[in-house]
Image (cartoon, one colour):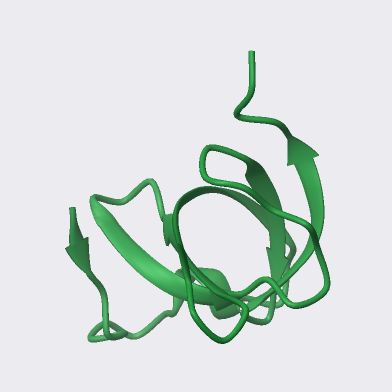
Length: 73
């Protein structure tokens, strides 16, 4: 999966709708890399949630606003 620096017309994680994405990696500064489902990954803020790798987070405007699924069995 390649990082997406927003080369297209639309930033998937910055949309006006809250959309679910799976956390691939937690990063410093309360950031996470998420799977966009489009073959790319994007960085989002996870400052408002307690997310772990594998969790599904609801992202609105580049900010994870809820954990909606756990990556834990």
